[in-house]
Image (cartoon, rainbow, N blue to C red; front, side, top):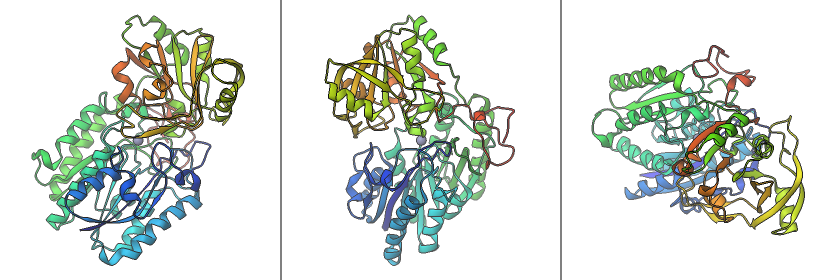
Length: 503
Ligand SMILES: [Zn+2]
């Protein structure tokens, strides 16, 4: 086959203040920057990225590739109309140029992209691809577990499959699976039947962690449906996307998908998964503590078996946070916490000031709370000791950022009254121990480790934690969606699992 390959990844929190513009897609962050044409074929190989996994697996079947364009930007507010149109133009022009020679198109998508002018970024892109290639070419895509899957996305494509792990340690594997299923569809020469259902409640990020119940059992069930398990002739695969809730769009929320050659079996499979998800609704949200409650609990923790890890979920840069709210930092300082560290606070000005001052110096700073993620907050105005400096360039050591060279920009490890804080110059989700260890700080030797992350940190930090607490400090990614002012959501959708409040 000749397969056109590309991707366009963004998770849009429509309530977050900063938009994703062209530059945000063009520049590299933890993932590569914009790749156009041939370079994209090598750019993601060996990384935990769907496109890399797809190319590796499809390459084994000796297919040839038509490289389109691929890019991603850190989750944030809306994608600007300019960025959306320029990126989709790069992809669609290349599809048009090669249309006569193509057998299939693979796109590496998130599934929760909202542009300034468009609620369903991926649905519109897939429809445009379909309009160019027509019905004779197969269209498949991989999606994030947090995709807000829409009817248009399902209609315009032949097969969609979402990650099954959160932390997303299976991104490359999802790309590989997409390649295997594409192979199977092409060999069978019959388009799969589809079934699609959207439950009528929203799931918070912390409730969709695949390491804990009930999500763990739901994903175990989905795994069993894979063709290679050989248990379900006629089923090509199923997905449970938990949705990305801070998106004020009509089709926000979770989705269940099933595909296969046998229409009745596909529908039956969907119904079975639907029953399981609906029965699990009340458990699909995790308990939240205030910073003060979490600190009290950490101070009472005498297990001594590794640090208490606190997740600052509402300022998660992986979900539209800017990484510079200071609610938990202030609580640590007020509680005179010892052996406590927070990572990574985004404040390029303070990181630069620490670098000017030098290691060992005392430096007066207005730290954090500059970008309005928590409008009621003011910076921490105090003198900090500069413990350690780095250029913020180092290799990840944990499974989530596997194979990736991390880039925090100018970085400083500061201390105030026994509380340490890592200050970086780029917005990066704290999900790898190397963010601490590259500064000579072993997180295992701390009593409290605060991470600006919702769930991805668990891949690398859960094994060293005596306890994991999810903390609700003010930030732009509310863990309780009842605090968000939805205008466009479908009527009757419950704003939290099991909640009485509906849209
Ligand atoms: Zn995700």
